[in-house]
Length: 419
Image (cartoon, rainbow, N blue to C red; front, side):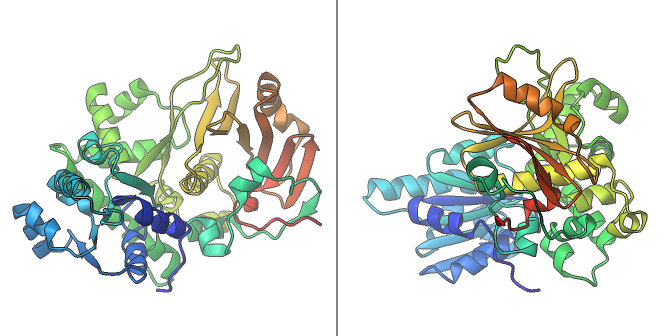
């Protein structure tokens, strides 16, 4: 398959220059191994190994300290979560090197398919010594064009001031491209089979490697239910009833689905704006092609019917925003809803409090009323609300007022130029 340049490459190289450990964390088959192998060509004395290799796994498991000391300058270790003891030993190697006055930057480049933020025992070992770098399947901008300036533009520029059209692609083509590299690039692949095999590998092998869980057969059912509710508020009581799991078990199983990068959450945004706000997160499936598969759909089915339902569209936007925001350290993604059901799909907040709010409309046209909730939030945050955006399925960029815009969904990957 062809090599697609990843947007995370520059951040990875910077991390190797400035930190002892760089941890590239993301789903299996999202391109981590390809990325680190490509990067290794630019490093001196770098050696790549994977714990998926039984002989490497055996050496590291039986003599972790000896295994780590066998490397030269840079050790690139793939699927590192399979040998949890390695985290503690890496900490020891880094600390001993620092005490000896050595420059330990770039000593270890790790990749993992278990979210260490969701698995605290793995995370705490390397606090203060590691740069965490998330990597996801392809974004639309990676596979379709060379640039990705959407986040910078909605926060910083005035490039959307004029009414103009942009080149669009079929939304279903964007969904089919912005996925796992093999799904995206291999036209001969049996995609439903690949996705089913992928899910089964994660649920019946990787879960067992990171957690002492007995009833593995309950996880596929829970994943299916979450897929059917993608973009909905988390309701633990309702999810418990539907899955047949008690709430304590449900929380543990749901955390595991997050931990192996099948599900992710967008937390609720809240501030003191005189409204009672819902605090429940919204769950999404990490890849929209996977969501389609879990719903018994595929791109051919949707393409023929020319319809994409609201939940699938929102999941796609949530995934695309998450991929782009993984390149930023100072912007976080939220949703907003009040107890009287006033809601905004996505709120992007910079660390300084600046806000860009986004509504998703599954329509080809936009009406002034579509900005109602965005204007309410803008009025409550006059000093921090930068811009309200309605993403829709048309092809015109339309300013509706000073800081309100209707943008085609394609701006997530299309270049924007002033007329």
